[in-house]
Amino acid sequence: MLMYPHIDPVALQIGPVAIHWYGLTYLAAFALFMVLGLRRLRHEPYASLTGDQAWSRKDVEDILFLGVLGVVAGGRLGYCLFYKPGYYLSHPLEIFYVWQGGMSFHGGLLGVIGAMLWFAHSRRRPWLQVADFVAPCVPTGLAAGRIGNFINGELWGRFAPQDLPWGMVFPQSGSMLARHPSQIYQVLLEGLLLFVLLWLYAGRPRKRGEVAAAFLVGYGVLRFVAEYFREPDSFLGLLSLGMSMGQWLCLPMVLGGVGLWWWAQGRSA
Image 1 (tube, helix red, strand yellow):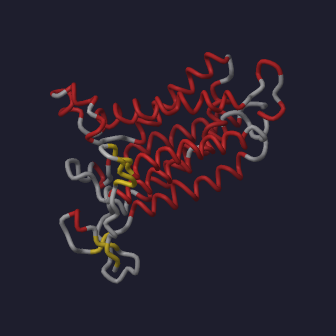
Image 2 (cartoon, one colour; image 1 turned 135 degrees about the vertical axis):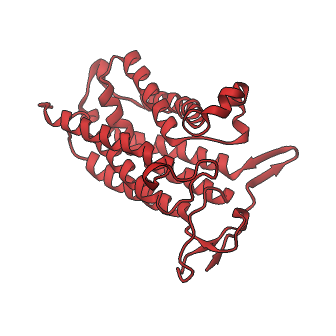
């Protein structure tokens, strides 16, 4: 049984300015996206596009900028809508209190989809071509975010068997019983494993929409599994069929991915 190491959430203090580890993980996520996006330019069909349809470093930078806006706006609005709609309807101004925490991956995903739609429209490019470009570059950012959750000592797991070698006590949870370090599970599943699978899959020519579909199905399934080890939100608990809110939100992702995959198979290219 391990003890949570009580990592100081402040990485660096310069006078009144505090730089938090969580903010640094976001910066790492954005930097990884940029590096992988530039590598992605060498994959087909992006490497062979010419003229107005050719992809460049500027495109990667613009997608990253719009994606950041989508993640922040969508993640915050998604949390308010999916997790505490009644509270934020009564306190609408607190929607903007982002420093109090509260972000939703699924809301962030919707925000990124909106950002990709805007980018595709402004550049007159097929939206699914943009989605296929972005999808393999996302999981490493998700892994960085989960590392930030672990450093903050938040989103801990459910109670684990007391003989589990890597079971961890999170005193901030109010219990001294070992729990699953679910943040690390999510780093490994939704982050590293999904990245490896998607990157290898996207490295070869695919029909338009297949890579985006693989991301939706892959993330949805792996997050659904990880949620069995993660403690549900205290203000929600488990919902219908004994599933968490995260699991319920993953179901439309998987169904949407399967539908997109089926649609892509009917295309000639």
